[in-house]
Amino acid sequence: MTRATTVVFAVLGALAMASCATRPNAPTVSEGSRRGLPAERSNSVGMHFALVPAGEFTMGSAGGQPNERPEHRVRIGKAFYLGKYEVTQAEFRQFVDATRFKTTAEQDGGAKVWAAGKWEVDETASWKSVFVGSRKPVVAVTWNDAVAFCEWLTESERKSGALAANEVYRLPTEAQWEWAARAGTTHAYSGTADRARVCEYGNVPDRAADDAGFGRSFVPCNDSIGIGTSEVGSFSPNAWGLHDMMGNVLEWVRDGYGGYHREPQLDPSGRDEADKRVVRGGSWSGKISGLRVSHREGYGPDLRGGAVGFRIVLETIE
Ligand SMILES: [Ca+2]
Image (cartoon, rainbow, N blue to C red; front, side):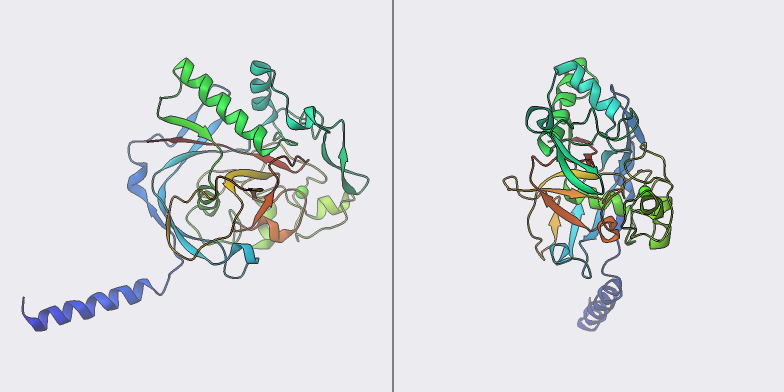
């Protein structure tokens, strides 16, 4: 290769990099990571999971709250399965029936419920009493309760042979959650870029909530659910077949709450030790800004309330 040819290739290479740099936020999906894996799985308690591919995306939002910045590139190194729905009361009940598990709310002072126009602690409230319905998401559970559910399910399915020794149920990492909520797009909301259409994709604080006396309608549409949760899967899924990633209930994720870093990261899992755990996805309550895919909040791991639940991941470990 002559010196002149080398220079030409160097220039072409620089041009190619410059053209990639014109869309620095574009997600890239590693389609090959899905090959050979079933698109869906189900399990012993009747849960359904969708396969989420590996890939790379820009996490956070330059225009969002301070805790959503700085934006940074994140690579999800391998495909995983994520619950298509939030964990339901019927599913959680199987855990409780098998183990006689008592949630934090049952052991220690109840949970926060929406009553008479505001959130307040009801000392008798628990997952058994708040927005009851077998197909509704379990609420009034703490991060610790959610982790206990994952540990029981993993152990019980390994024992029965339903789960391989290198497979585990746990809460998704915050990065897995945001990657799955975005589903290969750069939309502000899971399922749509248009705030006037969020009611097609989830139970949000909308006109129906306003009509029911919630008193703070922040979303310019009507999802027909007023105060409280809806049955899981009542709204359209996002592009990867995941329902209710926006609205219905806030979802606990695995990570300790902390700040973001600018450097690109591979499979970040946040801090293990932290005073707070991250919740994602907004809920039927709250504000429209909380429905965005990049929105994040840190709650004490013992917080329990009528707008907080979880979904789980099924993944392989080394
Ligand atoms: Ca609603």
